[in-house]
Image 1 (cartoon, rainbow, N blue to C red):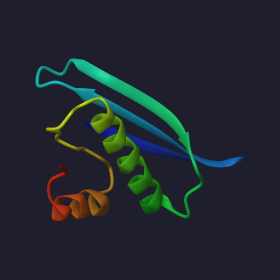
Image 2 (cartoon, rainbow, N blue to C red):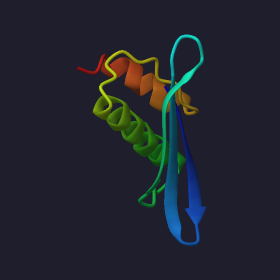
Image 3 (cartoon, one colour):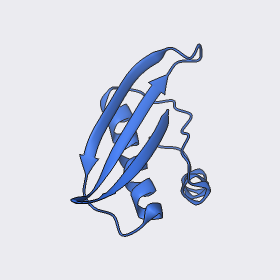
Image 4 (cartoon, rainbow, N blue to C red):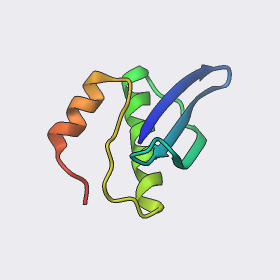
Length: 84
């Protein structure tokens, strides 16, 4: 599962995108959504990751490889452990 975020200034908002592919690279699901404003890029990445995980869990996915742009956010997710 890969997620990304965009930050907009006028009006202030974030945009989230997520795509879930299988081991063959085939698209299983995708989503995009508008989100609340974020105070910075790291907060925006966290919001995008939360959106992506909620989206995947809502569709019944339980085993995911999560990929995002922010090394800090991805490191913190790794330290958190597995989702159940």
